Length: 259
Image (cartoon, rainbow, N blue to C red; front, side):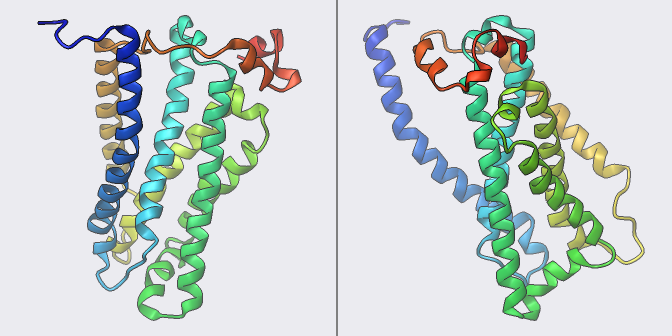
C-alpha cells in the first residue's frame, strides 16, 4: 500500500515539478484575492467613507515582501545551525533573496507613492481624510518613520551586490524591514481608532505582536522538527554555472570569508 501508484524516482520528480507549475500560479491568485479581501475587511472598513483601489495590492504585496524577507532570515539562521545546508544555500541563493528583497522595497515605495499622489492631487475630502489623519501632528512623525524604515533605509543599504550576499549586512536590513512592516500594519489600523488625548502606543501592542511572533516561531520549530529542511531529491545546479554568475571579488576563499 505504501508504494501504490509509485512511478519511480525519476518520473515522480517530473510529476512533482509539473504539479508545482500548475499549483504555483493558482495559489498566487488565491493568495492575492484572499489578502485583498482581508485588507478591505480588517483595515479599510474602519473608515467606511474612504476607499482606494490600490489598497489591496499594497496590503498583499507588503505581506509577500515580508515572506521573502523572513525566508532570507531563516536561510541565514539555518546555515549557522546546519552546515550541510551550505551545499544548498550558497551565494547565488542569497543573492537571489537579496534581489527579491530589494525589488519589493522599490515596489513598496512605488505603490505607496502612487496611492498617495493620486489621492492628494485628487483633492477629494473623503479620500484625503485617511492621509491627513496619518500625516498630522499626532501620527505625522510615526508615518515618516515607517516610510524611512520601509523604503529609504533598506533601499540605500541593499543597493549594491555585496550587501545582498553578506549574511550580517542582509540580516541587519532584513530585520529593519520586518519591524517596519509591523509598524506599517499598525499604522493602517490604529489612527482610525485613535481618540484625541490617547497615547499612540501602550504596552499591549508590542505584547500582542510578541505573542503572535511566539506562535509563528513555535509552528516553524514544529515543522522543522517534523519534516526535512531540504528536499533530498531536488537536483543541484551545476557549481561551475553558479560561480560564473558571481562577481570576481566574491569567488573562492573570499566567498567563504564573507560569512
